[in-house]
Length: 619
Image: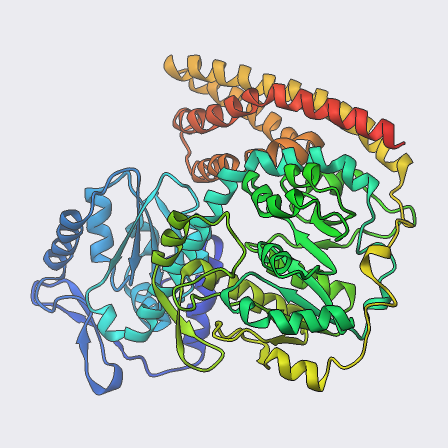
């Protein structure tokens, strides 16, 4: 490794340095060989599996590199809004050609082979070859790091450019990288969509629900020793639920296990005359109220509803039955104001893409020794995705669901079953939760997707072999009463602290806005020194805002996506030495973010008024 590369990598990319150094210290016989091409430039060949393959042309590697970039330009629109991922560095001829042709475009480099990277570092000076827009340099095959560093900004178009020899030399690695990267990007885009759709509702729900939270028992805070050693059924609305109605009736009538309904399953259960021991809900969307239209119309009011504290507030307003809450880690309001009187930390449940995952964690934390999945298909059965009795799923919505993705996964019977990317994401979340808690989970879902960490046992067999004693009647869930309360003095003190923070927050937002106006004027007049000083002043105010309680509890969750874009924009400017260019580059993203904070001021005032009224009434 050249001395310049050692110094540069140690400081700028220590993980890459360590990966290459570890490979060199293993004293291997390298399969990567650098030799002279016909035109006098260096070229590289790789002799894996007894057959040498040229990574670059053995005649004219620079001309070949330009052809790669020309082909990329034909296939993709490349501009300052593009982010190009180079899979394979080789000797970097193609990357150097790209930088010359597209000096404004950002890019990342993924090199799966430490020995090829070592060959590059032995012959070329990395710092001279790489441009200023390099966002990630990685020696390895991990797609997660690429997404985290390079494509979080939603305005970037992702383009992948592989060295033509790499899919042949590193066939399995390249296929694995592409598959994982596509999955992560798809899931992250889904998460961004969720954040955009729910960003204000998470806060509005938490604020509107706060009074109900204060007035209802925290199901995890109250004594739940009676759950230990018992079995709980987690009943979802998959199509196989229709096959288990008689079994569920028997379990309910004889009290053989606790029945927890999640999502739309309550409609199927009520349709068949089965009242579960609890309804679980946490979806923050406005549409969530549709799930409970039927039971509200039927005036069902005896079933306990266990709700996540950031659930759609309409659900709590309309349901007249007993309510219990669980604090979700998405709820910054509860985390700020609430502390149990006994001083213990509040146990929370994690946010997840489906109520089934949230409820699984709840049941584990309640202490149930066995969790039994019913109707958790995560797949389509005979072109059905939901069980019967759910009449708010329209024909158009069904058609959309059935046409989605059209991928397959292994079923509980070891066969292939039709599913979707959305279902697969839920499946992975369930598997992660099961693995995290090492929970004993039985999957009884006929025709459903196989869920790692579970065993498949038909529900009828469980009833005959395990669920043989009445366990529910002695401790019904609807008899859990509120005995553990939140600390009123602490909530009041937090309210006063928040009021002070809110005043400081308003001043900081105004101060940042003033700095932006100054920067506009100073950069327009090329006043570099003054612009630098104003930029430093604005940075200090932004850092103070990031430490502000109101910002972290209310403003940041509402605008989390836009803040991520601003953060990425600021990170990109860190290497810029010219103070004028640096100031110019942050004006637009900062202005966009601050303008959003201004538009929320009326909402913020209403939120503070609600807090004041609710907490003073509580105290």
